Amino acid sequence: MAADVAGALAAVPATERVAVVDHRFVGHVHALRLALTDPRFPAGATEGALTVQPDARASLTRALSAVTAGRPAAGEPASPARAGEPTDSEEPERPSGQDGPDSARSGAAGAAPGEGAGPALRETGPAPAAGSLPGALAARLEADGVPVHRPDLGILVAAVPDGGELRAKALAETEAVDDEAVRLRSAVKSRDGFFTTFFISPYSRYLARWCAHRGLTPNQVTTASLLTALIAAGCAATGTRGGFVAAGALLLFSFVLDCTDGQLARYSLQYSTLGAWLDATFDRAKEYAFYAGLALGASRGGGHDDVWALALGAMVLMTCRHVVDFSFNEANHDATANTSPTAALSGRLDSVGWTVWVRRMIVLPIGERWALIAVLTALTTPRTVFYVLLIGCAFAACYTTAGRVLRSLTRKAKRTDRAAQALADLADSGPVAEIAAGSLGRTVPGRAYSAPFWAVLAAASLLLGPLVTGSGGTWRAVLQAAVYAILAGVAVAQPLKGPLDWLVPPVFRGAEYGIILGLAAQSGAPGALPAAFGLVAAVAYHHYDTVYRIRGGTGAPPHRLVRAIGGHEGRVLAVTTAAALWHGRGFTIALTVLAAAIALVVLSESIRFWVSSGAPAVHDETGEPA
Image 1 (cartoon, rainbow, N blue to C red):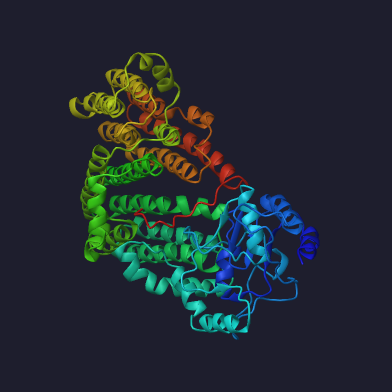
Image 2: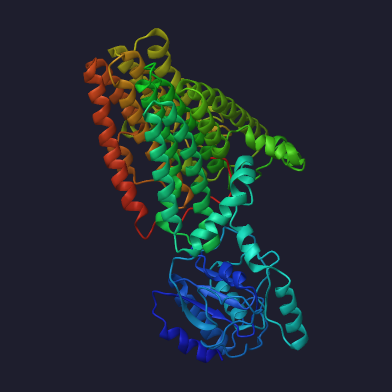
């Protein structure tokens, strides 16, 4: 009876998740896991089962009161059929040999708060049966404005049959599907790269299950992947052939663990805020640490080869390429009238199977990229590794950017205010650019392509002088940096809603990183390039952190942080001024101090945010190349 459920709910502490499962439920245990243990949604449901997070407990209480009083929700019959009495002692009926649900008991039951989560299956599945109490409660919750997540169960069974014949049919359908096989398949992303799909996932999913059965968490596997990659970087830093071979093998094993942690999270339904932060940042930390290890190994090897400029160039190229991806996606994912002939052609190509894999491979996603780096590290020299990596990634960047420019020029998408704000946050403008935007920027008329025009002009004014005429390390370069800061402010003075305004953030990233690389290389100061590598790494972490906060729906880092580290134009002014003031080791020291200061400020604020309760659980389930 609904009144008995109300009493059971009242006995569960308000800080815990609760689940209501109809005692007539027949189906797979994994169907209940998917519906009842995903912490990313305030409520979840499937036929005959409902769960709510603590934040939605008050809405559930109101819904239960309404159902008890017989008040219908919108679209519901005036007198919904009353479900049989759910009790804490009964479990959903299932075939013999299946274990009971991990986090849901029939009736009103307290579930483990916060730890379990299902895969990101956002398609709406079948609505819960109107004749079941969970179904009626779900309808009332939605009428009350609470979004109810209903996972797509695929071939899994979840039913509340009436009568012996329907129950027998549901049991037979449940018996016909291997619950564990479905669970294991769903641990793998539905869309991933060629190398990952065919050379890693076929066995990493079993490693994920092995970890789950031994109580290991995704965060522990993520940490193991990071430690493995750092050991690989250390092996590369030895500069010996044996060290390079070991580094390549360990880098591949690190990638296996990197795939395993996500598969473990989907298999065991464990998602967490801390895991979101680790997953979002460790991939870049591992790859860029390996670049540094290769550069150290080259300098310590027999040839004493200095490839720090190549290592820094590879990091700059990869980061700028990622910013292109992030900016384009943020600008377009909620735009209206978001179609184009180029996108239509891409959709038609997707229907030709082999073209899908070719197009995924040529953009060098993380699987293909790390495999390439590992093999070349073991067989060749660090210089060769960076040459091939730079050529491959430059081609991939040109391919993806050109395609996105064509899409942007041919589509008639209307950008939202949210997208414009996201692009402004990704631009990372500091106090100087803000002043320029509020003064000179207001006098410049805004047109469709004005923002990218001013951004490119700003980058050209900054880079052409020091890098082409050799004015780096002089006060003329500082003047050019001041012009860059002013023009950068003009570029962001108007809302970034133009067709190509998503190019503004990557242009700023290329200008900032490029001037640091150029000045360090031109200075010839001992240790300047490694110090520049550290500075770009610290700043890049801030930019990645900004991206993942925006993707999680919490917005960019607080603006006081952006101001504290100067914004992109403030850092450019600081670096060019340091190059003009100090030469030799003085410039190296200045870069090192700036890198350490930025890293300290950015990391402390980032850690504070990601371990807070308000941080989002952001997990990449899209399969987009990384």
